[in-house]
Length: 277
Image (cartoon, rainbow, N blue to C red):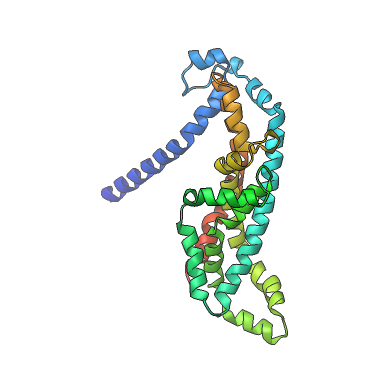
């Protein structure tokens, strides 16, 4: 009994330690954003300033920057269009690969998974030339095409989930006169809701947090995203750590809110396709 109690205590301490490791940088950044320049020097980074000296001016100045609104708008457009096509192409491709038999199927599946294994930076020069030749450089189309075409994670999730759906559903629908298009849109796709929720969440967090692709393919100011806005804001606010901290918190909010509200769907959607009955 004592040994079990000790083991439980160690596990709880370990979990608390991991929570502190994750939350500490966020709290320190939040504390810095609520301080004046003088308090940044005179108070510990681990503590809030006295209540009477807590200020929200840093957040007000960041929110007043015109490029922040542009960043939210551009990020929203890229996010919506990319996720739409990821879900559309991912579900259709996974359905075809999982339910139909055709020549070179194994080769095609192998090529898909090979594309998942190759690091993107290895093909960056070729990808840049392709995007430039398509006339998409310095447009919102560049990151959208890259996010849709280069990340095949959704294909794996959808295939795993479709493999758990009984084939008898397809056979019953076809016997009742349903077409393959009707089978997919009326039966298969609605049943993929947990997997779709997982794909949407993971893709949204990835796209919002990505700085490399928007910075490389959309250098114009009017095409800034949230991450490139933060990078340029950091360069403009050198030495003003409290304003930079406020900017970081504001940019983090969409990702944190998405994760907090939908975190249960991430593991649920992935685990739903892990066991085949």
